[in-house]
Image 1 (cartoon, rainbow, N blue to C red):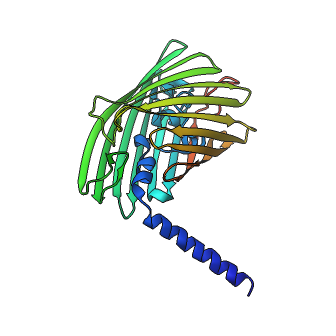
Image 2 (image 1 turned 180 degrees about the vertical axis):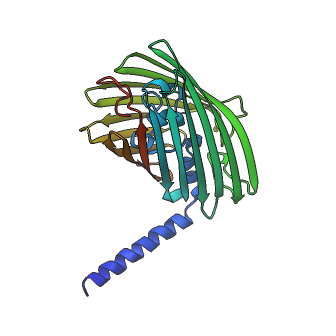
Image 3 (image 1 turned 45 degrees about the vertical axis):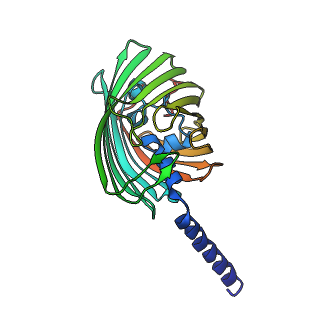
Amino acid sequence: MKRSLPIFLALSMEALAFRERIARADNSTSSTQAWDLGAALNPRSLGLAGADFAAGGGTSAALGNPAALTVSRGYELELMGAWAPEAGYAQYGGAVADSVTSRVAGALAAQWTSFDTDRLQRSAIDLRGSIAYPLGDAFSVGVAGHYLRTTDRLGSGVAGGEIVSRGGDERTRIAFDAGLVFQPTPLFRVGLLARNLFVDPSFDLPRIVAGGVGVGVDGLSIESTALLNLTTSDVPRWRSATGLEWSASERYALRFGYRYDEERRTHAMGFGIAILDRSGALDAGVRRDLSGPFPATFISVGFRALMGAPSRSEGDIGSMM
C-alpha cells in the first residue's frame, strides 16, 4: 500500500497537468478540426479516417453520399456519439435509412453538436434528409437537404484565417448535396459528391466536391477518397484518405485508415471495430492526428439495428458496411 501511494500521486499529478495543458491551449485550431467541414462524425468514418464517399450504404450514406442509399436493400437505424477532448467537442445523434419500402431509397439524420472551451462555446443542430434513385443496374443518383442552426455564445477562435465564433451569433441555413454512384460490378464502386450547393458557402457550410473508389473481394474492401474544400481558405485545399475494412469473421469486422489534410497540415490514422449480428452491430472508431500544429483525438461509438435483411451478394463491396 505504501509503495502504491507515490505511483497514485504521480499519476494524479500527470492527469491534472494534462487537463491544464488542454485548458491553456489555443483551442481555435482544434475546434476547426473538430468541426471537420461540417461533417457528421460516426464510428465507420473515423475508423476509415474519412474514406467513406463511395462504398458505404445505409446510415453511412445518410451522413455521406446520398446516392449510395441504393447499394444495399434493408432498413437500418443507427444511434451514435462522438467526442474530441482537446476541442471540448461532443456530438450526439442518429440516422435511419430505408431502401426496401420502394425503389426510391430515403434517409433521415439528426445531430446535435457542442463545443465547450474557454475560447469557444458553440452548439449546433444539424438535420438532413436524403433520397436516391437507381438508374438501371449500374448508376444511382441521390440528393440531400441540409438544415443547420448554429449558436456561438462566447469568444472567438481564429484558425487559418477563419473566424469560428464572434460571440452571440445565431444562424440558420439550408443547403443541398448531390451525389452519384457507379457500380458496374458488385466488387467495384465509384462515388462522386458535391456538398452545400445553392447556399453562400461559409465556415459552417463550406463548398466541397469529393470522389471515391472502392473495391472489395472475399470479406475485404478498400476505399480511397479525395476531397476538395473550395471556400474556407484563400485557395482550394485538398484532403485524401484511404481505408480498409476486413470482415475477420461473421462476428466482427476491423477498420483501418490514413488521412492527410492539406489545410490543417495533419496526418491522421484511424482504427475501428464492428461487432456484428444478424439484427445489428455495435461500432467503435478512433482517429488520431499524428502530426500538425495541434494534434487531436476523435472517438465515436454507435449502435446499428438492421430491420429487413439487406440483399447483398457474396463479395459485394457493401456487404460489410
